[in-house]
Image 1 (cartoon, rainbow, N blue to C red):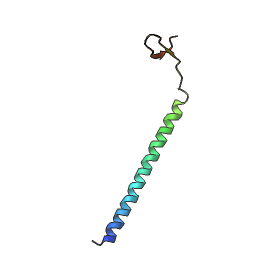
Image 2: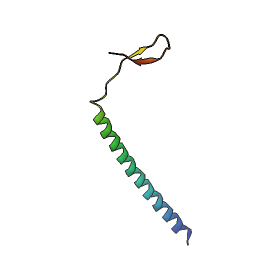
Image 3: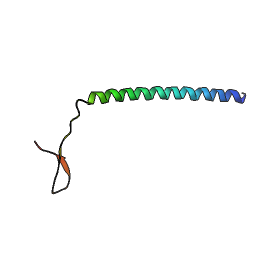
Image 4: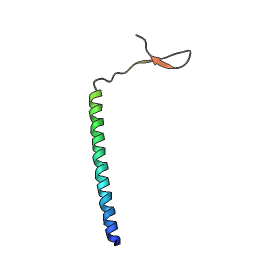
Length: 62
């Protein structure tokens, strides 16, 4: 096989691989964006209080 055919096949393979990776990256980013949008309304902060004995931070008791 002539070397230029091998180089051409390698180039086509690399282009196809790049296209597949880009599509998968877009799909994952879309999924993450939808997840973030769904969580925006649910996110609440929990106040923490330092335990003077152990020094650990724990959620404040109501």
